[in-house]
Image: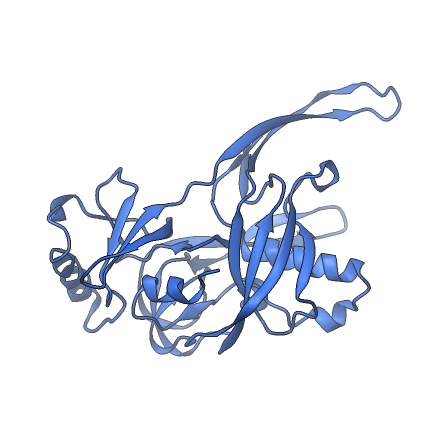
Length: 301
C-alpha cells in the first residue's frame, strides 16, 4: 500500500504522552501517539474550514523521532541496562514455531556480538539507527527526548489570585523532528498543528509537512511487525500486550478508559488473512519486513 511520509517539526515543548501522579503529569514515552497526531491534524483542518465528513478517512500513524522506530523482540540490547542495540539484516525472516524462532534468533545474533549472555530483548523501546555493519546488520541506540518540568497554577477569575490546591507540574518534551505515515487523503502539503495539553500557553506548536510517498507491504497471512498497537486475528505472537485507551462520554462524565488488550508497538504477530481496518483508530499499522533497518531506510527524512 502507498503511504504519505510526513515530517512533524515540534517548534515548542509539548506534553505528548503522560501519566499523572497526584498533581504531577510525567512523560512516559518518546513518541507521539497516533490518536493525538490524527486529532491534531483534523482539528487544524476543521479550523481552516474543511468539512469534518471529508476528513473521516484520514489516518495517521504514531510519530517517531527522525530515523527511529520501536524495537521488535529480535533487536537486542547489548545488556540489561545498555542503551545500545544490534539487529541482524534478516531478523524478521521468520519460520518455525515460536520457541524455535526465539532460540534460533538468539543463536544467530552470536555471529555479530560476543556478549550473548547479556543480550536482552526490549520490545517497544524507541531506537535510532546509527550504523550499518559490514555484514549488513544494524546498530541502534535508545532515543530519549530531553524534557523540562514547568509548574502552572489556576487563577480565580473573580479574585484574580491563585486558586488554592490548583498547582500542577507538567513534563514537556523539547522540540525535535518526528516522522509518521498517513493516508494519501490529506488535503494540504503543509499544516500547522498543536499537540497535547497547554495549547493556550503556547505549548505543542508544530509544523506538519508531506515529504513524499512510499510503498510498504501491509501484513497478510504471515508474520507482521507492528509500528503501532495491533488488534486482529492472530495465530501466535512475540512481544508485549498493553491496553488500548479510548474516549467515553455520558450525561455527566467524559474521559478515557481502557477498552481492550492489544499487541504493543514493536510486537511481532503471525496473522490470519488481512489486518482489521482500524488505522483511523490508531491501530494495525503492521508491515511485512526483513528487518527494522529496512523500514528506517525507507522513512528517512
